[in-house]
Figure 1: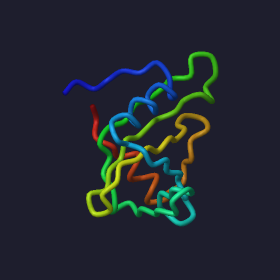
Figure 2: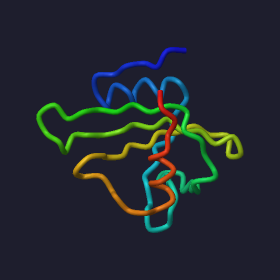
Figure 3: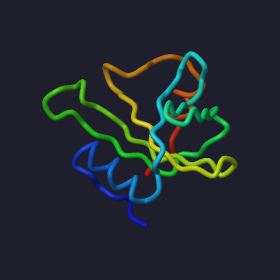
Length: 107
């Protein structure tokens, strides 16, 4: 399957939700995990796989550089989305969760 191309972060997230990636995760670097604040679901770096990712360049503002990750956890039977900045606003911490996201497979 060819990777899709999206014009905006919002468009990517809307299409991923249609594909079943319905849980919105945030990165919790201090606890080295992903968390869904709505459901209190917590995933450590070993609890999920990155199914695909989409990089967005900020045409006019370097602060708009974002990556949208489609992740899944077979053990927890869930699929979700993680959005993270990169470039000058990226979290350059040595957190295991950031390292896991940074080692996503090339597409």
